[in-house]
Length: 50
Image (cartoon, rainbow, N blue to C red):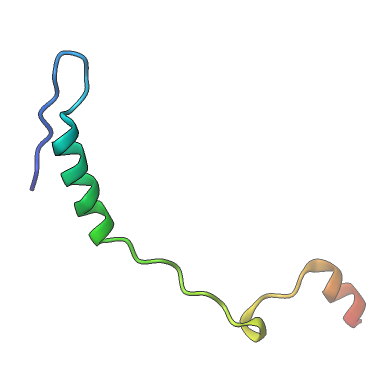
């Protein structure tokens, strides 16, 4: 696990920040897109269906 090395200003070096950002992106998984038939109807669509 990485630990941050803070300076007296509370900032980390740019190279370390970029490395941590790159590591964070490796765990990013976008939410799957819903197909039109999988979407939930809007409230007004419930009213019109009745």
